[in-house]
Image 1 (spheres, rainbow, N blue to C red):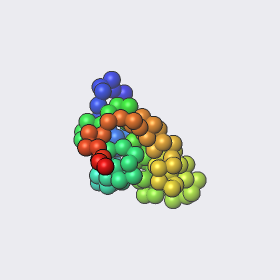
Image 2: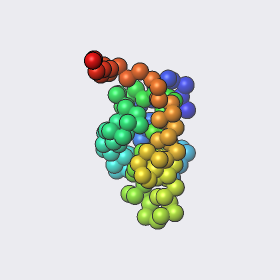
Image 3: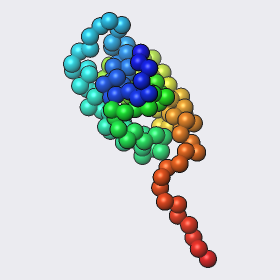
Image 4: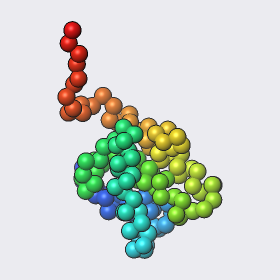
Length: 128
């Protein structure tokens, strides 16, 4: 565990694999497992932005407070490759992004952390 304010995408992949039960403590990760999860990160981050859950601007500077929730979401989104039973996949999806998307525990937590924060977008107004 690190005390840094930001984490990297490599940290996120490793934490997600640990959530999936693929990576045990002290064990090295299989390159194909790491590459599979790492290749899905961009599309998962884009999906989170499109759903207006959270926008990850820089995958190598992930805010520490988002890290656990993002790892749960990534694990849920990658669960089908690592487990075939509904008993394995279902709980990972519901603790992550959820079904329907945005209803999972981690998704709701991220929404709560980022709600009411300034977006930096220009405010559209109508003048009469």
